[in-house]
Length: 356
Image (cartoon, rainbow, N blue to C red; front, top):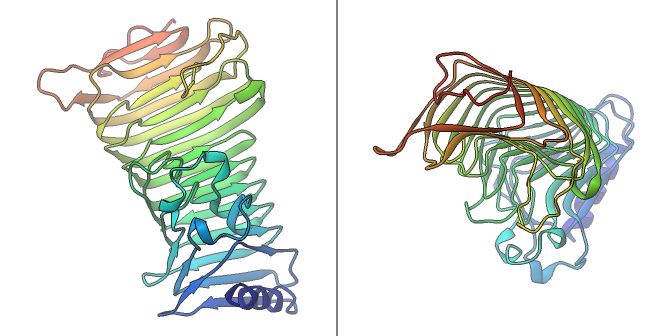
């Protein structure tokens, strides 16, 4: 079977002597692969997993495990490089899953407890749920990837980070039905640079604090990105009732092209519209917006800071923000609730609602 061939190739490479090992999915070939785990630790200090052909997931009806949380899983590997090229393809066959609840759908590629991880050059389409999830990993470089799913495909996030640190995501195109990139709790020291996002839900910090959870996110830099036709732009989203912090977050040189809601902090995140009113909240502070320009398709607030009265947002700074409306009769506006900070006089829309 194909899965057994992949398992055997991984076992041989992982158990090879010190040095490096290479596992190649050959060009011009298509492999139907059922859920599989590639586990470490491995003896080589580098393992190259080259995807030059196509790897295709089984449709939902053919999955042998209806409870698998991921399709292609890499766990506990140091020095892993997953590399594609123009001919390589990862196809999650997600369409048969998209009508099913999110918790029951698998993530296409999951990386857990990996160090010195590189993911580059992949063309990755139609995941049942998240395309790439990276969890409890350190020293991660994600570059030159193209991730695609229809704009109406639910929860098809491009890249999700959980409890990971020292991460660089750059020079990639992400076009999905949900967040292009989502930074979850326990994550720190992340740089996102030169990412083209859209369609999708934008680049998000969170959601954080769901179900009363304590979450921490800090030292996040989002630079030189374009958000085209996204439902949100750059967003921080937290649930009522949580705790912890999201701090030291910097958005700079962002270009919006008809983004619906370009700038958002929302401490009342409630996608299902049936949430209890709770006083505790994840603390949001030290957030800067510098050089954000472009257009918004929003008919309401272009800049929106909705913060908790018990745990308000603090140290918000806007400088060089210039966002105009795509509608000839619409104007860009800002709203603030319990948000403390400053905006320079040339900011457009005028953000005079921050508490100084």
